[in-house]
Each structure stands twice: as C-alpha cells, then as structure tokens.
Amino acid sequence: MRNLWHRLTRQDFYNGIPADQTLMRHQFIIFRIFVLALVVSSTITATKLIGLNAWGNVVGIGLIALAMITIGCFYLAQRTERLKYSYLISLSIGCLILH
Image (cartoon, rainbow, N blue to C red; front, side, top):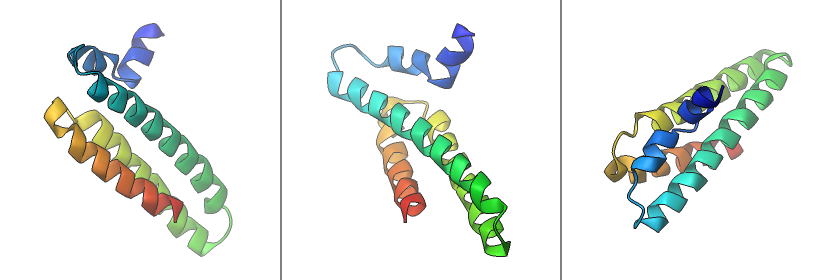
C-alpha cells in the first residue's frame, strides 16, 4: 500500500530534486496537492453533472477530460526543467474548470 502511495504522489521524483533547491521542492509539493485536489473535485462535480441533462453530460465529460489532461501533465514531467510547463498547463486547466 505504501509503495502505491509513493507512486501516486511521485515521491521518487520529489527525492530526485536536489536538497539545496528548496524552492523547487516546495513548488513540487504545492503542485502535487493542487493536482490531487483538482482531479478529485473535477471528478466529483462531473459525476453530479452527468445525471442532470444533455448539457450536463457534455460538461461532465469535459471535466473528466480536463482532469485526465492534468494527470498527464503531472506524470509526464520527467525532468525538473519541464516542471514549469506542467505548472502552467495545470494552472490553466484549473482556471478552465473553475470558470
């Protein structure tokens, strides 16, 4: 169970960030919390919207698609240099979901 949690939260990537780069380590922690909260809230909202009407289905499926893109951004960033792009994409998707 612990190994699964470490994979979900990308603990190995976090440990790969050098200890002297505290700002980047803190940014990754905030990014991880943001992504997890965004995916959970989008999924819960989508499940409630899907049962409403035809437009609820479209918006619900759109929310699920945006959540999947966010997960992709979180897991596809393999190097610390690419984290800024992942942050930008995830924040943009968060604004889309919010509005």
